[in-house]
Image (cartoon, rainbow, N blue to C red; front, top):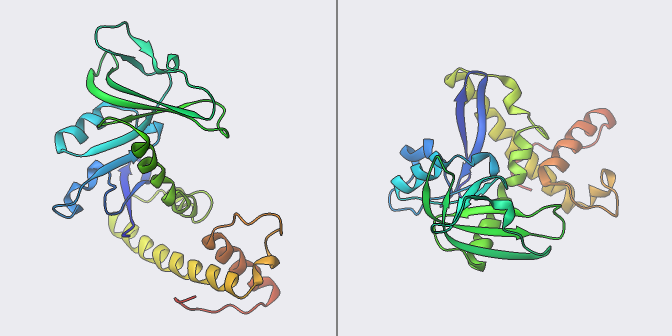
Length: 235
């Protein structure tokens, strides 16, 4: 799997938006997408903009994005209603086809997943370019595979967006250093696990630390405690 960070330049600096790997992308990255690859955009509800979905449709891309429960929809010539009127029992999913979204955008012929898992307080509403079913839901779950990398590069790790950099050249050099450090910390975290040292930093009843987090915490602690700190790029 190829994992490449995708960034958007803003007035306050670069923002980490999404990752491109095999069939995932963000519209601003169309120049780096290999030819002949199927493109599928996945996103949370902050990508609710109908314009983005229209862009994907114009490019021939697929999309599966979360939308807010107050987004208006209608089916056929029915009245406009918010998505939250499409309810589902907790622990179940519902699939609704051939909807039109919002009075202003008029995005037609889209399809919906209403998903309410047991650990969520409310249902989630996910719009897709093609008819939805259980396979659509499973494909959407793949997006969560890359969520830890967001956390590692943002607030839970390097806090990249706090740099407020606007220079592309400087930003590229920063990314090179971050990428190298990420690889080292992942390898360090794996070594930490393989040698049975994970109990030094984690509670026995919790094993939810990522390899990045283990590597980072071990590197920081080793500077204080004088622990062995291998510099390697293989576990």
